[in-house]
Image (cartoon, rainbow, N blue to C red; front, side):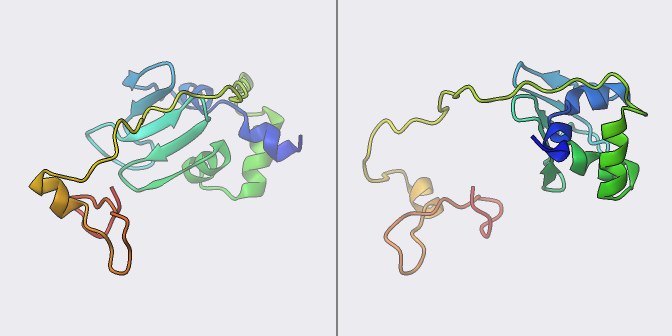
Length: 145
């Protein structure tokens, strides 16, 4: 395993807790908090504990601990890797568990039938030249749901 791979396994949850950022809503798999990257009133910053990734729903950005530290500390990748690798600023970072255990799918196809409800028919129109329906977000028609 390379140094970068080891550093990417450093727990984002632990890093944030050392910065006094605790999740306001959490479950065993993930936590939500106010974004440390911008000002907001509704928690939209998600940390996936199993995958050890973060995602800011307000900006559409996310990534590994390296990406997060680069954004929070306003430094380049070399400074970030050096800082995280040296344990200089964050001496008690722990390595996130390797998430190699398979997960149970949360979406299951129960039946295969034609759409009947008018709202679904207008939301799930096939794209031109395609026989497959593409789900579109009702408030943002250009964005898939």
